[in-house]
Image (cartoon, rainbow, N blue to C red; front, top):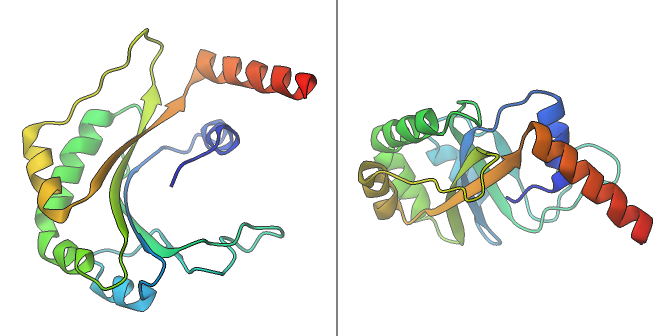
Length: 166
């Protein structure tokens, strides 16, 4: 679920936006049951014990699950992500409720990929209408912040300094 600085840098350098995604995961969840209940095509499907991708040396999945794209708004468009998430959750509430009740499902979250703004304190909020859609589904709310422009340059400098000191 979390992304490393390296993966964030790679995503940003390729101009890939950070969508809002729902993650459903569990050690013993049946992936076929998950996908059969999905209201939309999963953006990724992963199975415990299998490689995460076809690349050599790919990490082995520690759990099974799926990801569903809820909003593909850019990571600097948090307002659109929130409004599209509320619409998605409302439109697909029945299916998501069934998924949430599956045996073996251990974790369910909605992850908003947002930009790391160049401010002293970054505060982002959720409107009660969106929380009203999320709460019955018992989804954790995750804000994944991604560095942009100057912050990305500082992170690269920091990583270089760490490597020199190691």
